[in-house]
Image (cartoon, rainbow, N blue to C red; front, side, top):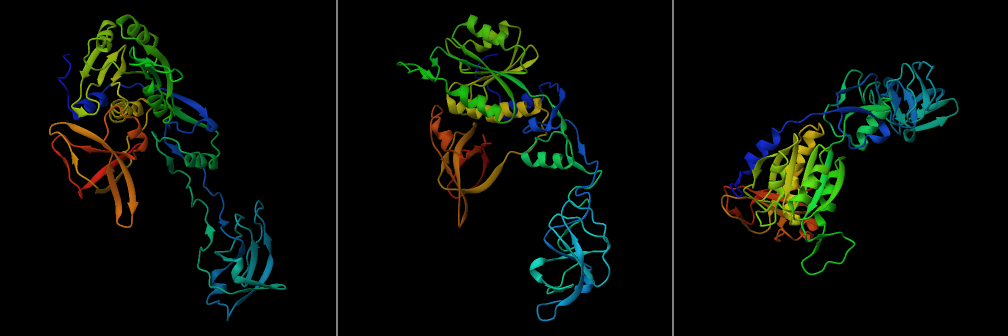
Length: 405
């Protein structure tokens, strides 16, 4: 495929989103499940809470017995004992009586409200109630949190710490989850050196390795760094072959049409197919997408911003699909642009921005920087997309900013 017969962003995503995906599942302990993708709908097999309980320290009452109660005209109820948390409530509440109850303790039969301790006065064998209580007040009823038979987590959901709390409440020690996506990461270029070395003129430390690897780790991928491939076909072939057992292969650098960029040649030599080479975007135009041994292969630009933006827009959606994650809208916000953004007509452009809030609302400010300036990503809250059919945005326009996750 001749380079720079670039596809549009929409065409690129169409090819990426239709790439065949094969999912495999496994059972994992709850302790190890944070960030993993649920492989089945999780249906509650019990009610949470399993019994009605008090939400406060106070007195369980029949609310009609305290109707109209106030500080100057309290209701007088007979004291009939107490229920502590962890105890089974065996008492039955009679009319005109009350039972002291701790926060989280089981409600006694016959009670339909709890008056907070602050609105009561103990008077020997009686209690004065100084506030009207409504039916159901300060009670969490059986099944009010989670009802038996309800779907609490849907298939394809990425597990959060709060999800693990739900599963622990249901007594689920194990979870059916999709297996982690195994991804091979290769850096390429004669100029790339390890981060612990001092660059000589013409050399650069391996920025993309740490940026992309940790973006993948953040979504629970199993990433292996294969190494730095030098600018010769033999070394590139060797690194690609070493990546063969993975589910996806990412190569940073070597995607531009230069004299010593051999990525596309190596993929074809090994029996792969180049699906596109070049996307009509800025930054990130020289991005490659290919199929090799039935696995998706991306060739990402070497410049750090180009690499990270191409990864965010085009690689991440496929990684999520390989993991079995349900497609969700990107995290975004709408705000007012603080300055003009010029752009070239016919190119989809991604502009890094900061997002800030003041008394007037959300303000979005562009960070103008070249594609090699990694610090612009560190300062950015996210990015906005200038569509290919526009020549930019003007100050004061309302725009959508997509957050970096």
